[in-house]
Image (cartoon, rainbow, N blue to C red):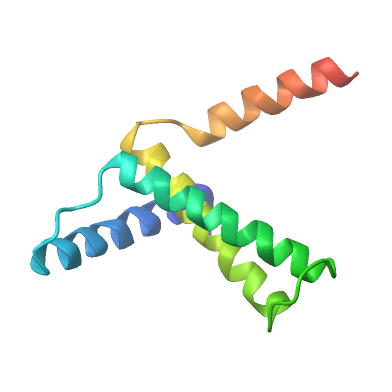
Amino acid sequence: MDLEQLQSRAVAIAALYDHHNTTAGRGAWTTGDLALGFVGDVGDLAKLVMAVDGRREIPDADARLGHELADCLWSVLVLASRYNVDLVTEFTRMTDELEQHLT
């Protein structure tokens, strides 16, 4: 899958979550809710990285690491979509700036 396909899938899953939440009597997630969920996922990712690196004890940390990275990517893709951010353009710009700074 390319980035556009990944983002399209992430947005479709976000719509399913919105439907699930509104059906259950809760509101759809705002961008603020998504950002807070992302922060939580990053915290979970940090703990798993520590476990994989031998600094914490978490069962199946190696197996869970990929899932948590994908959770974080999902949040980034959905947030970028909701804010109309072209990730390819922004990533290219950011890495070009870093490369220029470092060389």
